[in-house]
Length: 180
Image (cartoon, rainbow, N blue to C red):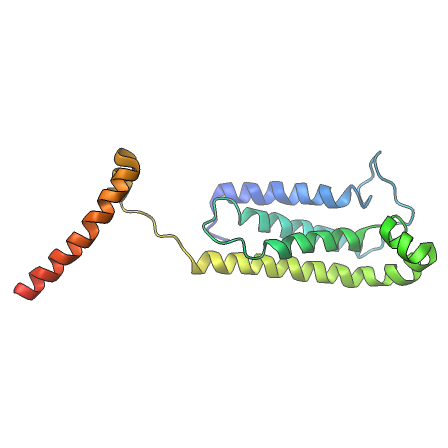
């Protein structure tokens, strides 16, 4: 991450801010006219929310012009969803209230929320680790100046010409060393 270009850091900062708002607005951690909270936030909601937003931002930055695979994308999405479930008001979650009732939401769901928060951080951290490892392991070589020039001038035909020349050059190198 220390060698990331400025573009990636911009995506990381914007992704962190966006993810923070997307998680904080519906859970009413940030007051708004659209959502209200029936129970006040608990002390651990804030660190889980902040660290999750940061991890989501960094994870999003790994997708900015990245040659790596999409491994870890599902864990990242799952971690974001778990964060919303963890920091949200237990009584405001309609699925939980419909399943357990208001008393069950406070008695059974609320004690599970810190565990969900820790699981969300674990999933997001794992997804970021997978993306960063894949980035280091699967580096795409920077094309040489000749290959870049051929691609600019000839497009696909230039690439085909380069592909045809490379085996011929390897054969010439092999032939000259055996003839000496």
